Image (cartoon, rainbow, N blue to C red; front, top):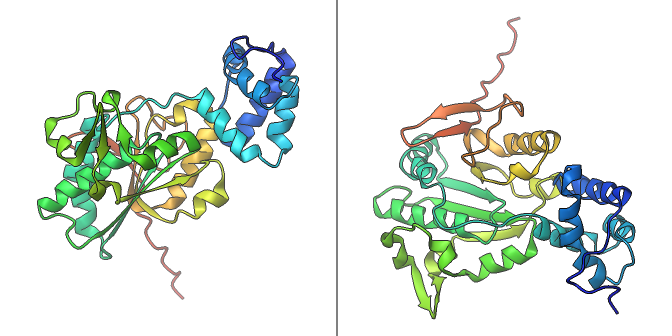
Length: 293
């Protein structure tokens, strides 16, 4: 039986907070200052109860050593982060992507393959927005004959389950232009994404701080990571940006949220100005010439 009601938070000591904070940070980069102790206490009490553990110290040990730690860590991340998203969020950046960036990439790439990664995709609105934009580009004659791979990833199994179903309520359509509703089918008071854009996106469970798993995703032309690194401290941000830099092809693009920047994080990317937005780009690395004999 649970040791306490789910409506009553189990008390967390300062030492227990430090233990939990550290193991969460080591696993996925989420960092919590001491003033967030109450947040962890309130949001994780239910998990301690459901696992029939007695203290948060027991929970920290479970997260560190149990065979199901990966599964549980996904639930922790889900409880401690906000999965706030909707279709065509930060539309000015998406206009830069569809009207300027893709045209530039298509003009210089020899191989007609475009790979796009939505890192921290939450419930799927972002990668599906990208898919609809690609479909509209094809109608205008761009990307015809191209293989376009769109990957959405998140650390939360729950939000990935929602994304794979592709069924959304009103909150996901705030401010969405009527032209995009042709890609949805009414299901009562909700809307289901049509098969064509839905089939263009593949979803995967990925921890951005797990280099072995991330490496399996392969090279990318564009990486969207919007409103994700706000949960990381500087050290974790640097690790993630180093990973993104290694995964992007030369002259590939990194799309961050409007409130995020790489200031004091890395100087490896350049800031490129487009008509619709400013976007980070991986510079072209020129081949080193062999010394003359």
